[in-house]
Image (cartoon, rainbow over all chains, first blue to last red; front, side, top):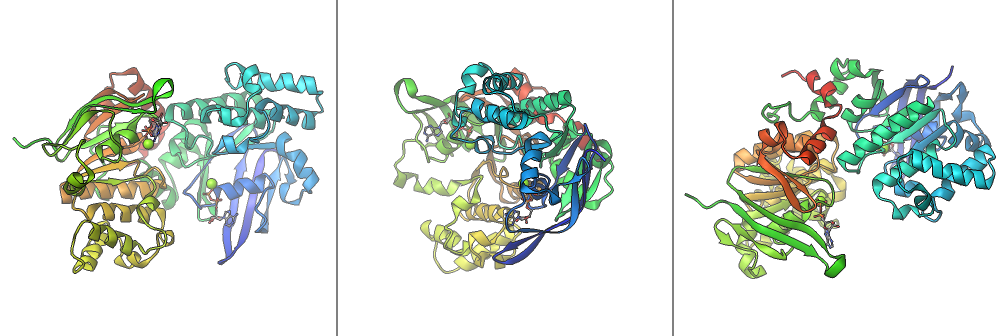
Length: 270
Length: 264
Ligand SMILES: Nc1ncnc2c1ncn2[C@@H]1O[C@H](COP(=O)(O)OP(=O)(O)O)[C@@H](O)[C@H]1O
Ligand SMILES: Nc1ncnc2c1ncn2[C@@H]1O[C@H](COP(=O)(O)OP(=O)(O)O)[C@@H](O)[C@H]1O
Ligand SMILES: [Mg+2]
Ligand SMILES: [Mg+2]
């Protein structure tokens, strides 16, 4: 089967205070070419789930059970070498802090060109040209000049555009976006979200959009999954999950998200 | 006629000098009456926190005046301002900042209580009453700040602010570091406290949902300037300035799918 399929993923993390059962049986499916929004409060296990898909679980983590199938192959069984190939070409990621995601010591254009050379074997000169084209495709003005700059010379919104350029450089089938707009200004958030949708749709890839912003998920995702305490409590078509949730936790999450109803008096003591 | 609780008269704040200086607040005027909740929205760098700090007398304005309860306070010495410190208190985004990490939260609140010249006797009872006021189990008072959750610590920082029995709270992004369910609890708490304690708020937030839920008046700030100000229903329901419209459109995208789901 193609796309992403996570079955009964159970992960324990060893900590000074003892083992933490961080993922307690995660089930998740993303059909090819679709957007899934993964929502839930902090600590519910969203980022850890993403790490598993990227083959980047922390050192202290143990997989107790489950499978993570990416286009049919189990990531959890892949060798380091296979993982290096998979990351970038099959799955890539952007995170909340794009400036930290990019390598601070390498010019932005060079970081993107390097990936293109490694994964696609493109000659140096061509990779450099493609990197500039990619920056331009992400809506970065003066892409040639920008390609020669370092990440710290970018604003937050622009750095996220560059991180997206790097993530999409090798045409991954799945993009993981973990809180990609958190911390950006509202109007910049809207622009970055629209860009992700536009570029990923154009490439026909799928997206795992991790966010605490229900409205963002509602806006761009066909499907939504709700995570709570290490498990997915509900997943389905966005409109169904958000307007007719079956799980009481989903209901309470939506209720707390909506603080005021248009023109109505503010929240009363509930 | 009682005097307005707070007045800002053409406040300007310039950081730095010469060509590299930044005008963070660029001529802000307003009058705030008791019981109002003035919501100040705007993107990062628009000058909201600087304005809040000027009102709290944590930053001196470059020019302009602040009037509190009928008296001009921006020029007062720290000593002369001390009585007003009771009147105006603050709650910030990171509640950690209000507590010493090595002390129990009780001790931090107590210290604050004593600093204001309150007698030590009765302090314990007062502090426990404050904890209950913010809907916390007083047992939490004996923990270190690192041993309570972010939402609990924000309640405790509200309790600390209330210890002074203030008339006015400046709330600078009070929910921005919190999860959505905790955000809702803090918003409800602040609204209830306003009624119980007859408080007035200056509420700084980039979160339109929080502004919508709480503010009675809204000011939209951009590059240090108030581009639009008015009753909350008017500014949020029929914005006049293109920038306000843009902010509201960004905040409302996707909400239509979520809002109808909530039964009235
Ligand atoms: N490297 C780690 N070491 C110890 N605990 C961790 C680590 N990463 C995650 N956890 C724990 O796993 C749980 C899920 O974390 P995470 O996936 O980051 O949540 P979310 O992204 O939903 O906020 C939390 O309880 C967190 O404390
Ligand atoms: N202490 C300071 N020194 C110099 N510049 C500052 C200082 N504090 C804020 N600024 C600048 O003033 C402007 C407004 O900042 P701020 O009041 O923090 O805005 P907001 O709270 O709306 O994000 C920004 O350009 C910021 O960089
Ligand atoms: Mg996370
Ligand atoms: Mg601020």
